[in-house]
Image (spheres, rainbow, N blue to C red):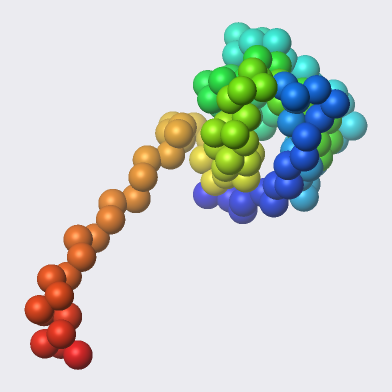
Length: 121
């Protein structure tokens, strides 16, 4: 459901801050700042995104047009950054009534035994 968002990440002025530039605006010219998941109680895309980022470990989220600034403990960014990029990039794919977050993994088909592959070849 919906197209993915192209996201590029860069370091902020502090080791606890990362900035994410998007290929589309999420808020128009409004600035949306969230200090907690409870502050992001709405159903608009920036609200949904902020809640998802808090679930991942963010401590503050600001969304302004096509830029998302996320604060989190500096020592967590190595593992957190790819997850934040995925959450932003897939916002519209999983946005809407009843959408699951995080998305369920697609089932992986079992590998064919090598003997069957060799016989088929």
